Amino acid sequence: MSVRQIREPRAMQRTGLGWKREGKVVGLVPTMGYLHEGHLSLLHWARERCDILVLSIFVNPTQFGPAEDLDNYPSDLARDMALAQECGVDVLFAPRTDAMYNPDHGTWVTVPDLTRHLCGSSRPIHFRGVATVVCKLFNLVQPSFSVFGEKDWQQLAVIRKMVRELDMPVRVEGRPIVREADGLAMSSRNVYMTPEERSAAPHIQKGLGLLENLVRSGERDPKVLREAVLAYYAEHLPMGRLDYLELVDPWRIEPVTRIGAEVLAAVAMHMGASRLIDNRLIVLGS
Ligand code: AMP
Image (cartoon, rainbow, N blue to C red; front, side, top):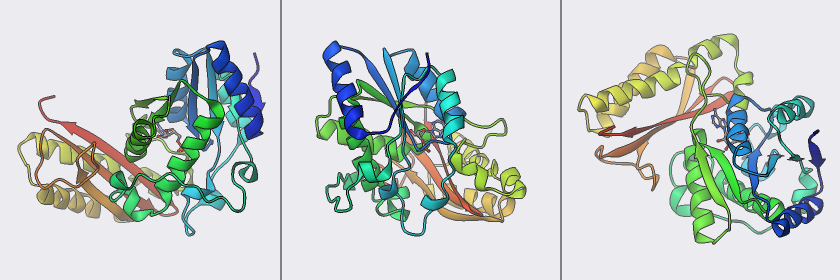
């Protein structure tokens, strides 16, 4: 079976509503394309749990700030189609930007409580764009469940809260971070890096590993932990420009003043033209 491509939002919605009437279990994996193993892991997981698997590819302009990489975002629809086929995708929904947003678009979903820190602080309109487009995708595809990666931990938290508080009839599933052999979290943006940046980039997550070791050996002061990782980055990633390194409550996404039973260490780092994010959930007693 080849992948059916739908580009028109209205056609997608008619199809989605039809599936709903027939009682089909529909799984949706929203992406911005340029697929890698991280995306494929979500597709494989969803494939085993639904009757109809939908992959959406949409580089959503409303989640990019003016100085960000919207215009250079990597894309290769033919390659994505071939990968989608291998993963058993039934429908690829790839709408055009002007079909998703009228020039006078003015309705937004915001989740302020979870977006004061981490990416919400350095990318002020980002999560408004994400929540709005995911809401639109849910309305168009009408999925039973939708799968997101924990690499974008804050995004997952925002979507879960949106779904819960706006009573959206969609189950939200989170899946673990898929990494390259050397530990770098997979990202479509990894291709922007020079070979030197790419070979240093695994230190981003090694710094988080160091932090976890310190926590497990008894350090409970976030300031001390942060300083240790910053020193590690200064030594091993001199070309990196830190956006943030924060220790937050994993569910409220608020900085912690003392390490408790669970903490999320989250980092965003500019490496040349790429802005890379990573995180590590540390659960004490596990
Ligand atoms: P993106 O195309 O970057 O917007 O990502 C689409 C979905 O794939 C999001 O739910 C991401 O969290 C997820 N994703 C991206 N990279 C990874 C990864 N390395 N491991 C697991 N999921 C990922």
